[in-house]
Image (cartoon, rainbow, N blue to C red; front, side, top):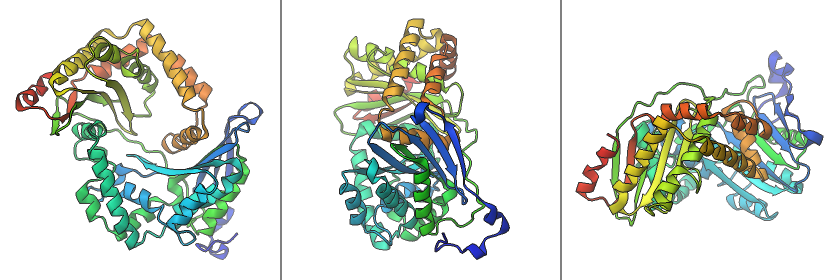
Length: 459
């Protein structure tokens, strides 16, 4: 099939020899859970996971672009572009896009992160060809018209305002800035009012052309699907749009690098007239490719991952100082963050922070008990499986795995890696991560005397 974007007679000899390459990455019993991957000439990767027992399918396209790919003046462009791809193509208006999926009872959405963007639709298996056509059309044929940019600017500014009105959400952006400063990873995914107001349609179009090349995209599909049919339908959609510029192009590699976060003892306070003070106390952690991430997952679960965790028991159950308290990790290609969040009355913020700091120091020095580690391993294994019980979660897993790691791991292999974590592994990673001097981010109505004492927590 000859697309509008190229002619067969114009192909080089290497392009003429280019063929699609298909691999079986995970072989499931009787085909259930089988993961296959095809790399098309032109560099587009298509990964599917087959589950014949379900009646739904989730189709997604992952783009190797996030807010960390933005310059300071482009901050928010990735998220802005995510909105604009729903605004219309040559074949469909914005209403046509949403109505097509609504008419079959499907769900359609997208999300932007610091290192990737994903667009997806979940439908009945019989309506998968429609979902493929609509999402591929959006990704390859967006018009990005001046009037759409102007209209959507208002919606994005409202989204920024909504986030700023939720200090429990906003404090995590503040923590990223506290730890990473004015860097691409430290800036908010949504951008700021100033950067969003300054973005023009022309700059967004250039950003789109640069980052939405097929070599930067991964197609992921999970559910009651036939891999070869999905490949044919996706290939036809991309060829129709003339998206393949070079048939000998190869996919972009997963991000690599080594970024050291040297921030320690830094405190950032954002004064807000809120009923609660929202705090994140944390330190540098592991990159997502670090093999110790399995031990870190167990540590995080035991320390602040559930109702039996150390932090929940000490802060909420024993003392009633907070309703919400938990720990979390954020892993990027070249660095990571570990944070402890709590929301409490402003008058109790120092008590909460002191308990959290004491627990971090205690676990860093003495580790967790074998019982805590065993319970955390069981909890993590269970939550891993339960979190993959729908086709949307499976699509996310295989799409992100291909984009970020360049390979796939079966659920059984994941469970085995978690089960292999030893108490010594957890204690070692606890010493390294929790033994560092923390930094602190706070949003709330703290008085001057309270604010001046915050540095005591990170001393």
